[in-house]
Image (cartoon, rainbow, N blue to C red; front, side, top):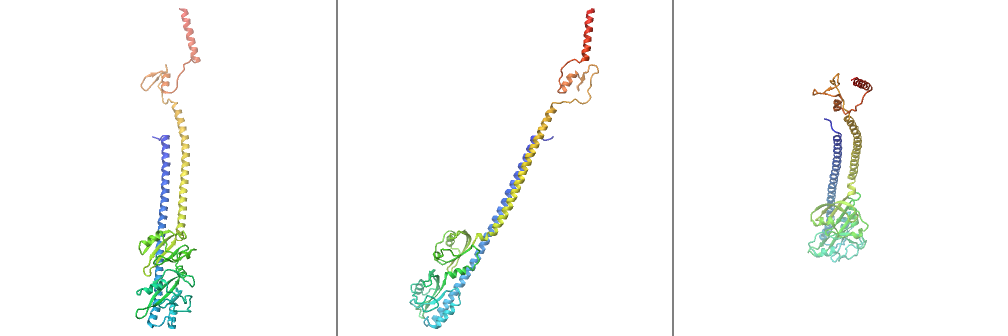
Length: 408
């Protein structure tokens, strides 16, 4: 049994809807897969940035520990020499020893000694600290009052002679009886410390900051325009503050810098001896550069695929509309033919007819008038009349009948 036109049209519409649904699901799956792949790839880049910053922070920690240890060895060497010889620190032999120790550490800006009241013991030395009274300096007062103090590392301060920012590392010197004899101290400029930090490769927009035990900023790379105001500043906020408050040795976080508005992935590292805080950050604009290219290519591919599927869907819709129009034309033609056939009934086969009265026998064996049989089996109807031949016969019969009546 063949389908009706409405059933055929419904089937075509259902096929089109199924095709559209399949294409939409396919596009969503492609978009979802691309998004998941890109998100996973980005997470891997961020994780790699965390590993890189952690490695760089460890390198910086090792460098700082080694540098401080080297400076401390220089201080202890001068201290031991002064205490061993028990001669005034400004003596020629001590001066020679100080200069030889100073030359061993390229990071140092100066290496000095003071007497017990805080006066420099090296007048006319190679820097501008000569003849200065250092008795009010925090490092001098602390070491004079604390016999058991070890290495002292100061907060950043401006050198009065040169006007540059420095940090001071100092040790207490004693006489044989434990009497305070003075201090030996070394200075490091924060500018030199920043140059050392700049040797670490953190990309075009990465950053490194070093803070002291009280969170006072010692050095930052790259330097900002208001770096003079930032030196010694203890203000931190956001994830950096949370990392410090957590008391963990190492923390990782991603945030936007309040100084240059650059988004970075950071590794925070806490040092205990000496007490420093290291923060190393890689900029997203650097380490996500390759990922952004991948995202652009993936997005273009997905956009092309979606556009292609939309184009195919549009072509399918046009084809469906054309098919519907063609189907409508066929349906109309079929309807016209059906109506035409409904108006026509054909008599086929051999009909038994009486040779005399012209009656026709039906399937049940009854004899029917010809016009009755044809009317029942076709759409034809009859209107009665008399043909010329019959009219002549009837006329002759009527004349004969009339003549007969006259003769009677």
